[in-house]
Image: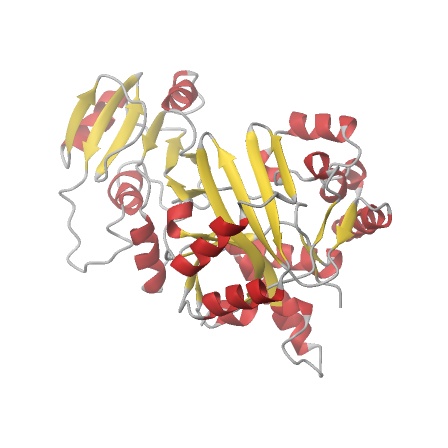
Length: 409
């Protein structure tokens, strides 16, 4: 059964939240980061990406981040709630509402496959994030978890969000609202409801969860008095029911056609698949079709004829068929994790943006895919298998520095 605990968050003072909370660093361009750092002295980017760390050693960089975090608490930019709480978080983007609960997930649940994964992680990145957590000692951005719709949790959340929120602000066109749950009966109710959910699933944040597990093992091994209640046994999680998530596809762009002309590449595709010309494309909508943009034209590559006698859920995914029958045998791209000839574009990008990448010569062709369904994601996780990298772009994307969990020893 799932353990989701309340916690005492460090969070921005209400009057500062819109200026403090930020997207993760990876979602900004270098110019955007430079602008924010030069114009907003209390942005959480000043903590996690200060200018001076560029010339420092990795260890000194982490110490600088920790120092700035401590300074922001001393300056009362961040306040800590007096008792453990849950938090309801709602994000509204482009008219889509996503409402969930933020609390602490259990590393033990992760290790015991109660928190299930669907994506392979890279050991090197896990280790780097573990070192970050070990030195800096805080979780600033929750792992996004999901679970099948639960009426009890849904009713509780929708009753609570009728109240005045703790935070309610708009930034970059996205509305963020937070409600605090600090009444003991509500806390016990939420804990009990999650405890009756047999499994929950990582939607986004596999590396963050894996690095927390690494940290816990390291600290547990070094702690002869380990009892399971230590801060390192948990990590922050934002939990959304399956109907509160939006899953987008993840598109592939290739820099070359493995020495083939566009016409010859299309001929090779037609030898195996039905390929149809499309007048235009506004979004990738149908499963079992790979949408190809090449030579300023759109084509539909119909892949339904590919059958897998093993019934393997992973190999039957559109993204796997693309790799197994087009990228690898025709374009020679064997490992999409490290082949420099391929890049990725999240499904939130418009087809016009995809076209521009190819028409400008930055890519030779683009392959656009419809989203993996929630049912497919769960089936992969339940089977103990993993999707290819960059198979899903899941929203909401969570803010950094909004609700921080301390990992101090």
